[in-house]
Length: 311
Image (cartoon, rainbow, N blue to C red; front, side):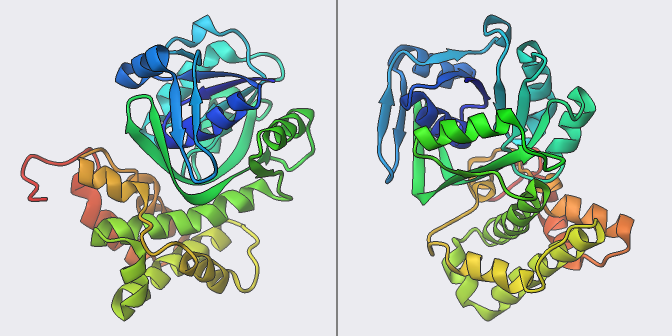
């Protein structure tokens, strides 16, 4: 397969490197110091699942240099979605699949609007990874899996081919029965983890252990589930407890990437997380006070650290 990864950060860098190491034809799209480091020194990944140092990596800033792809994996931050969509245009062939492995629930709608459902696919990446320094990806913990498929949940050759490629690369991957539900189930946990660890500037362990913060965590979860149900998602009867159990199983030191973005003064994805839940709740007449509070509390940091911030 010819795979192009747009966004060589923690998600794109890790999974793209695994596929490259297994012999797949992968081209990375990056920019700035990260691009220059990869070109000059290669791409290094530190992981408990096995370190990698890949030399002579195919990496560029200009997708017009690449040609048509079989699969395009979009792994940029959500505020860069529109730019990534434009970046992907030169890569499209008749059967090219474009998969968003971003956070959130809106990226697929953007892909359909730009390219139609012929090209748009759904994807979920479960991993904690980041750029440690230019040319270096750090994978934290042992969680590293992908789920993907056609948005209408039909079987397709391109999805099966990517699944086979992931198997060769020892990547845990699946084509779920309902990719849209899989996207939402991750979103439930992601929004909750992002909200709580960013608000508290703390890892999940002490947040779970303190009754007041645990109650807020549970309320955020419940509101997201209520909005999902109102949108027509078919969750299990025990979905709230199931999601709590998953969060309770996370390492105590785990923090969401949005918390790291806040600490570094980067823009936050909060408009696509609690902000989206608050907006959808208003549209659907579903109360979302906890998510509305999170969005209001972090709104001033949406575009990065304000000069007045005392953190």
